[in-house]
Length: 204
Image (cartoon, rainbow, N blue to C red; front, side):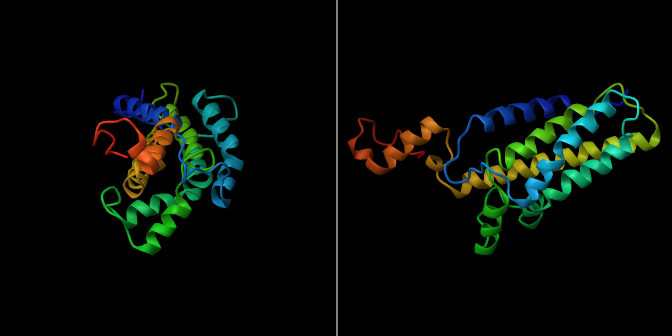
C-alpha cells in the first residue's frame, strides 16, 4: 500500500473547505466561471469519473500515470494564472502588490461557485484518490502518485495564500459570512446609532 503523510493535511483541507463554503463574499463572489474555469468545468466530470474508475481499478480504466496527465491537462492548465500569483508575489499573504498585480489578482481569483468552489471540488477528488490502497505500487505509478500529491498540495497552498491576500486587501465587512457582514456594514455606516461598547467592533 502506498501511503503519504496526508491525514492531518486532508483533515485541515476539509475543515478549510467547510469554512469557505459557509461564507458569502460581497465583492469577490463569482456565480459563473470565466472562460478558463468554464473550460475546466466542462471537463471536470470526465476527470472525476476517470479518477474514480482508476481508484476502483475498473476494467478499461485510465492508468495512474494517465490520471496524472489528465490532471495536468484538465485541471492544472486552467488554474495556472491563480498559482502564478503566488509564484510572482511570495509575500502575498502580508503585502499588497502593484496596481497591475492587484488588477490581475482580482481578475484571476474569486470566491464562489464560479471559481474557488470549482477548484476545491476537484482538489477533494484528488486528495481522496492519492492514498487509495487499491492502486498499484510499481515504480511508474508510485512516481505518478507522488507527483499528483505534490501538485494538489501546491495548489492548496496557493489557494490559501490567495484567500489570505483577499482578507488582507479588503475589510472584514466585505468578506465575512452574510450575517456578520450585514452587521459590519451597519456598524460601518451608522455605528454611532448602535448600543455597543466602544471598540468592541473594531475588527470591522
